[in-house]
Image (cartoon, rainbow, N blue to C red; front, side, top):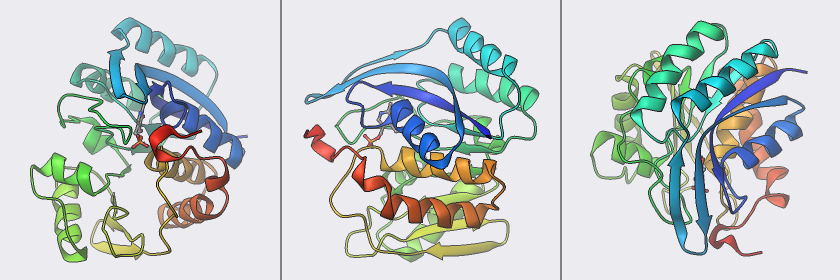
Amino acid sequence: MKAVLVIGGTDSSGGAGLVQDGRVLDAFGCAARLVVTAVTAQGRGGVTAVQAMPRDIVLAQIAAVASLGPVAAIKIGLIPDTATGALLAEALPRLWPQAPIILDPVLSASAGGALRGGADFGALWSLAALVTPNLPEAAALLAAPEAPNRRAMTAHAKALRARGAKAVLLKGGHLLGESAADLLLTEGSGRWFSGPRLPGQRRGTGCALATAIAAGLAQGRDLPGAIVAARRWLRTTWPKAAVPAGLAA
Ligand code: PLP
């Protein structure tokens, strides 16, 4: 069984973050290894607290995971501050040079509220095999208006890749009136993935997609293959287990 390391935050509502990641890895038959970077309080009032874990606690978790053997892929979700990002950028390539890093640049929660102060991912951006922003995240990262169509999405994906990420999956789910169209931009080529939008709104869809892609890569799929499998799984299997937006029971 391949091990996937998920690095990110807890969500007290159970809808997103590391709990979600664990469910996805279970479903894909991967072993989950966890590094908690932050504890967040999320309930009916949206995000009410974010506490970054101290540096030595993050480092101790990384060392403990390393003691268990190799990891086949790494998914990074919430990084609460630039110091944690810098620490990860130093440790991950040293300990797991072969493991592809999927960076989901989480900035806020759909429960309402910011999860981190800035949008600077530092050296992690260029270490990532894939970054997976949605349209609002891409706009915040580029300090630009949100892309209203596929043409603008292409420009945003190019600008984000130019910052050093090897590949960008720009998720177009927030594009109203379109099917759920995601753009994968790798060196020299772009590919659209389209399909019916998931009905309703659910918590943690972005977390789940990035983790499902990491699971696919860990199990030997190539990047487009892992994206196709992750999107298919998200459309078909995952909705039954997902928590609706608004935290309704
Ligand atoms: N909360 C935490 C701890 C997360 O890691 C994430 C996403 O990765 C979110 C919230 C955002 O998920 P959602 O947009 O569904 O609120």
